[in-house]
Image (cartoon, rainbow, N blue to C red; front, side, top):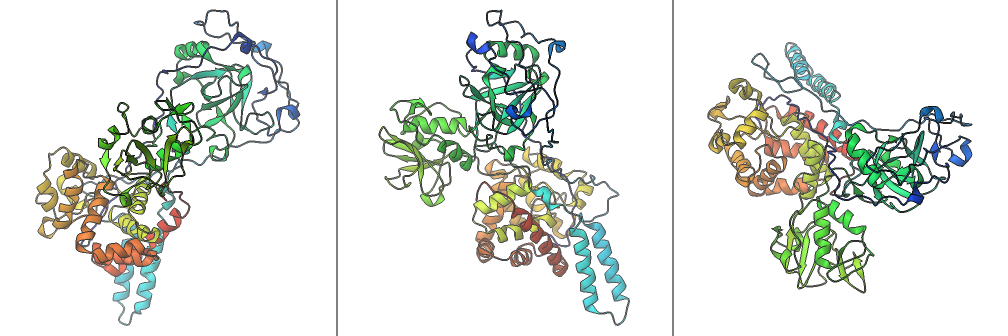
Length: 597
């Protein structure tokens, strides 16, 4: 909301989720002495360049590392064969250039921090000056053609819009979304050349990555099989157990060497193209999967497994309450002790009705408990006859209560994704969502910064938006000051804009405080600010809220939000800019695979 409001960009740098490696609490059993013996060399590459041909056709000689003596002291580091003993690599018949197709993570645009000399302008200052020059030139001509003014203004908006890369609004897809975090089981490549990681358990399948000698990997499953399923960085696939050091020897070596000092697999196939990536929905890396959709995705992989009363194994037998506990715990949505179906009735946050239920919610019945899939059915450990199923309707039995444990407030890697997913979860059409976001891109800068403070107030107070937000959250700036802006305001009535929608009016700011500070959230919370927006519209303009939720026109939605909520000065110019931004945002998100849709 602004009255000839100006702003500047403060970039919010999003840190990728760190892959912090922790000591293992469970490890693979030591290999039997027979497994230490290398039987053949059909899946070890002797050339650093990876051929797409199968090993049997490549003609390359492949030699495993000399087997370690299983009777030796396992506390010693495994011997590494002298390089002079390695066979001379032979060139394959065809050595195609393999370049993994990796899409770099988008970098947010950067803008300088304003100082006292900074002119009070929006991020699109250059285009505004262009438009002002065009307007002043046209008004000096007595018989100026109004249509030429409109054309010049539209051209200036187009020039400005072309400088914004809305592609950065979508982050790199998290292929591990819905995976469960599991304990680390260490292993490393027991070869002198390179060990191929395959897309399936066959030498005829594609090579998705390679492991250099003694490169680190983690055993995810099939540790006792001929082909072991492993994970190493973004490479997930199958390797022959003959060439993989597991057990205590691997644990000792990794502990002494240090995980951070060991190489990981080299990627050959983009993870999105690797069919083996989701063979097992488990990972040793940090994942954000406590969203409802992540919980259900993880739970459904156990459909068909056995029911055992009192059981606690997702694969070998489990009952209904243990099933819910295991799923929520392994997905990070619940971190307390096991409880019975009766106990679940008083935990978590109560959901008012079935109409308000979302994926991942816990549905409690008399003597039974299950997980709601978000589409009218439940995933449950039902009984001994049927086991774990996902086919029954949620209202098949009388529902006693529905409980929520999921962190559904802000889903996404970027501010844009979080806003898009939030509005879509709350019933806004894609067109309505884009219309609102086109306005936010003009109010909170194209970074969609929820902590953005009016540039004039930044200069007056010496505080950045981030600093102001931190002081409010700490209680150093009062709730009253946030609402009435008596100290920092520079406009009539002392008001200043803040946040996604440039919240300015005291009534609107009282809603902002109610849904952020009063609920224990940061003033800069995206979900809190959008909660306050919806609550305000429900009370003061329910017609606009309904039209935004059902709109099938990006232009109509952007215009309605501008004229009925933002109510800026120079509405005609603002409309051109905001509609242009909304349309581009809409096009970008056509390619986005939202986890909530």
